[in-house]
Image: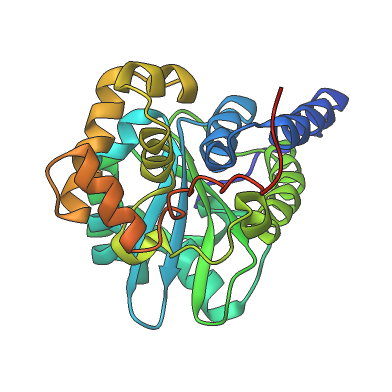
Length: 270
């Protein structure tokens, strides 16, 4: 079994948490918050990748909601989750204990994991090796959290302490997520397997932005925006932007189109 390396958290790390909180509070696009968090976690720890997952343990199903770097959006994350979630040591631990402490594979896994089909499938698909989990508050029977991976070295005590601070921040973001979107009556994109990043693209498509402008707004490549559009069209079972927006409104994923306000009687503008 691998060992966790001992290192203390520095004042610089506390500054990173402060800056991350500030970035969340000042983010103008609510749909950018979770992608922003994934990007910052990969940079701050640092790790090779970070993925927000949402699992229904009882049903044996789940989805990757968003992740960083961008190439993860084209990786078979959902297929890996469906095939191997019940054998993953960290997920099994959280499902059976209700623990919400950030933990590493090094602390939980035994030799069977490192020889398992699940480990090798993940290694081949996305290069997973050493993993750190940030479990978030979730309903009974479900697991929501962030899984981070790096391939070159194990996680230190400093990483775990930073992760614990970040987990508290992420829990706060999750608790206020509906308020941040300010439209609590909207439908749930996960019912249609639409990710947070795809919802960000959908919202900006509704604003009339081009793929190039959406890429600039979300700080992703234009080709990645086009891939997200293709995924949206496939999941909504449409073939063009106008129909996609109409379908999304019908499903409650976007607010109704605003109607022009009637002029007030007796008022004239000069």
